[in-house]
Image (cartoon, rainbow, N blue to C red; front, top):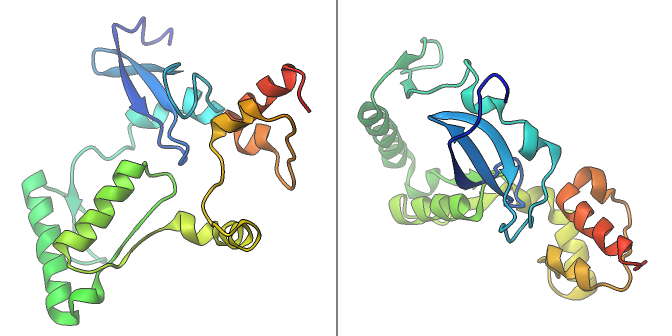
Length: 200
């Protein structure tokens, strides 16, 4: 921050390091990101954050970051910079050609667990509306399938049964096979707050 100076404005945004959806104030000086501060009004994190969300924002201005669209006709050719219009037209034509040759079901989409709900919604909308099929999924369903199976078997529902905020109403907290302070620091900080209130 010393190198960049004092910010002159801030923008409320969503952290993309994981799927929690923490709100941050991206503090800016001109178009330069100076620091990230957890947003106290964030419904998911209430002003808490993990170390990545708080301090690992250097990728936003890293010199290796791609800032213009690039395409290539085949894997053995070098990448070349193009305009956004040319890149979108190139991608659309290639996708249409795949469907023309292999059928409507030949294209699908999968989102990362680091995507926001809004980004995941947009991908499934693209697949269903533009490509005309239901081949859409998220990797969270795959990597959390054992969790989902266990929840479905024991509770009859595979979705999460509580919100993060519910820990603040708990009289007892049982943690099995997890380390929330390391693996889920936003929840871990809320859990520690509840423990400091004298709960067990």
